[in-house]
View 1 (cartoon, rainbow, N blue to C red):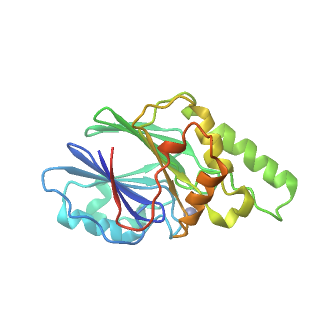
View 2: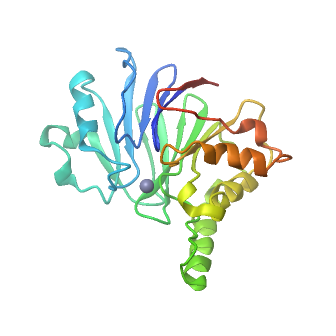
Length: 235
Ligand SMILES: [Zn+2]
């Protein structure tokens, strides 16, 4: 499996037979191999997660399939592609082509995706995160934490090969709450599993900060130190 960081929460996953693209909003795409089928995911309609430009990928690859959060309305999908688009709600499961996708409810808008394909499990959180903010009322922050823990519960003890998890420097000292809790859900990981921090607003120091502040964390060597758009990782 080869994973390319496109930008922000955008990742492109190349498998033997399938291509998965998550939350593209800008950045350059690698050349798409002819013989593989493309599945395009968008976790919600916010402009840093969804750009209607994704539909132009179907010009290059006609059988592209779009898996869109239900808050991205049908009218946003070009008419000729509506048959190739699914609008997903939280907590649904679908199999199509050679993938199975399960959705989780987000603490922001939309959904998170758990995708199984060719024996690999890939999790893209979208904006499902513990969005605690300095200055929000404590009961708001408390409810956020509870919701996050409930919504992400289906992932407990689940083996995930590649996980894309928000690590957002705007949350200041609370930047790692969501990722730390995610990591605690399935303590035992395989040697080759990887965690890709995302939603960093191009400030990758936040990844170094996490590594510095977690010197003895058992999953330290699973964290991918992304440094810029277009980087690829094999796993
Ligand atoms: Zn976002």
